[in-house]
Image (tube, rainbow, N blue to C red; front, side, top):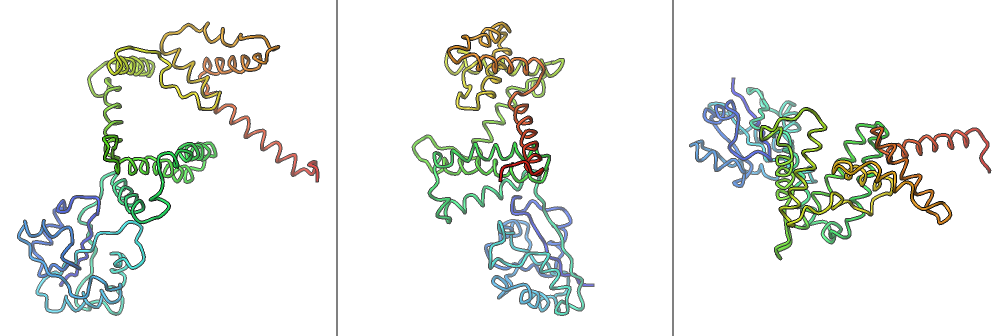
Length: 351
């Protein structure tokens, strides 16, 4: 029985990298039909000696009209007919060609071929991470075609770096994993957006999202010698120690000086998180615990420094117990908010 096969390929896989069943189908087909001459698979077909034809009227046809054209093409084909589905556009904008599933449903209806079986064949599929390429394409389109996206700068987007990170943390603390997935997407968007803006610069300061990825890959490989370079470690503490030593060596190589273990700590972050990061960095560098105690002792309360010293001491206590003081305080704040809401629901709140 003749087959009408809708061949689907992934837009994030290099054209021509098809499965063996897909190549077998193409080489043995009676007709290979395409919607237009710009289909990305055509150079690979020509190199392989596979003939193809443009199906007249197919490029702009809706699902029902395309189904009629393909049904007519099957008649008298003398073998299997392969329809090369156009690449799926990001977000499927209005007016885009019908997707393969919608087309298969249409062909399976009353207007479909009577003497041919209709099949969907996925000739290539993306590797994990392939959708990041789709995100790059969407970001490029938005930067060129959306008035708001086009006028953004690193500076105008800066507040969103903080906001989106906090929203992701909020979703994590809530336990809503679906919400966390969405919020992490918003964080990822910030990376893509900044990289897209940087890619436009031609003054030598530009970079692309590939540069961003290359930099973090190189850093991860460099700072995990126990994974990539055969260095032996006895546990997570050795990993942390090695990380700090490698980072210090990198700083010395870049500046000619080992500098301070506290270099790069952002002092604009929330105070509890700042105190915790300073103490972690100092601890990794081998600083004596007495330094934190000395800061906690501080000036006396008469000049307003006593409360800050007490808070710093609490941070040191949290560090010693393996706790994150920022998250601990956030947890307590959430509990307090629930207590207040319970109190309000009980009718005690002022009207």
